[in-house]
Length: 159
Ligand code: FAD
Image (cartoon, rainbow, N blue to C red; front, side, top):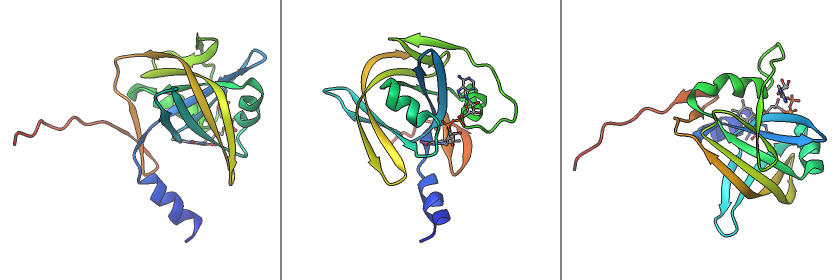
């Protein structure tokens, strides 16, 4: 099995899109990520997976906190900014939730403290203890097979 086949297969799992953000000594850094899931309800835990080359990795290790911002359908540009897919630098304004930087207009802003980290292969898994949440009533941005998508509401099926 080669790398491309593995990546193609993993891309067949449709996900939302998040921006992970952290504040280290007043400097806010964000990164687009879709490796995110809920882990536990009691206590409330989530997990994110950060590649070894990502600059945010060391920042989260030091700040020991991060936010997960689940992007809305109209926030594709933010995803591209924080994935380094736009050539020019754009200023992005952050709000604060429980002291963590969060993105205005995200479907969900989830503030976390790092409760554990695990190095696995070329990624580090951070377990985040959720300290606060803010929700907006908006549709999510979707990522599937390397492309951004939007949710389409199916007509209700009557049986
Ligand atoms: P950098 O390359 O340092 O930053 C990324 C971009 O964000 C740069 O252009 C930078 O200018 C901009 N930026 C950062 N902070 C700010 C700020 N405060 N204001 C304005 N701009 C800012 N990688 C993973 O490790 N895990 C994943 O789960 C993951 N999922 C992804 C899902 C999708 C849909 C995509 C498109 C990419 C994903 N990536 C993931 C890849 C990852 O987003 C990129 O490799 C990223 O560029 C690496 O981040 P970095 O910390 O090195 O950030």
